[in-house]
Image 1 (cartoon, rainbow, N blue to C red):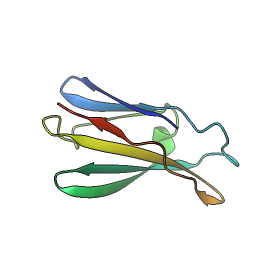
Image 2 (cartoon, rainbow, N blue to C red; image 1 turned 30 degrees about the horizontal axis):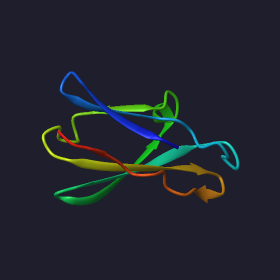
Image 3 (cartoon, one colour; image 1 turned 135 degrees about the horizontal axis):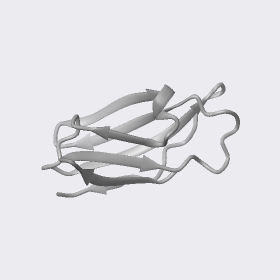
Length: 88
């Protein structure tokens, strides 16, 4: 899973590719975000599974944010992707 971050209409837009080896049908993702406030986690399911993107004003665009993502299937969570850092 690779995570990319862009800015569109003053929002961070995250896009990603699914892992090559899913071990089963992906039912969701866990998104980890680290910034000056610490680390937070967000569970993504339903529409966030396909298309593989998230647009949000939740993540400030004026501070650095580091993201990583892991896929979830019936067996549980997979490994996290490599981290991607957005710097304003």
